Amino acid sequence: MSIKFLLFIGLGYLLYRLAKRGIQKKIARFIAPFAPPQNPPPAPPADKLVQCAACGVFVAEQKSVCKGGQHYCSVDCGNKA
Image (tube, rainbow, N blue to C red):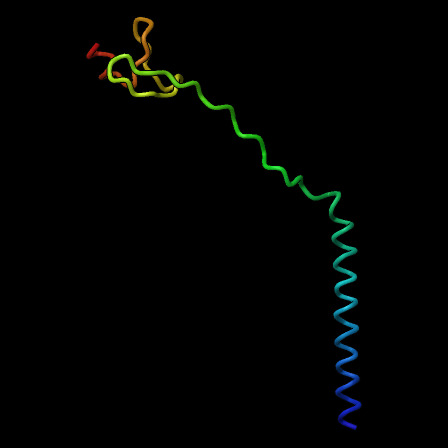
C-alpha cells in the first residue's frame, strides 16, 4: 500500500513539473513580443573637450569659461592669463 502511494505521489509530482514547464514556455512565448528591446539605449553624445589656455587641462566646452576667445577651466585661470 505504501509503495503504491509513493509511486502515485512521484508520478503526480512529475506531471506537475512537466505541466509547469509547458505553461512557463507558453507564457514566455506570449510575453516575448511585448518585452522591451534588449539593446541598451544609445549613449548621449559626448561633450566637446577644449583645453584651458592657462594650465592645459581639458574641460567640457559647456563648463569652460570663455574670455577673449580663449577657453579656461575656471575663473581663476581666466584671471591669471
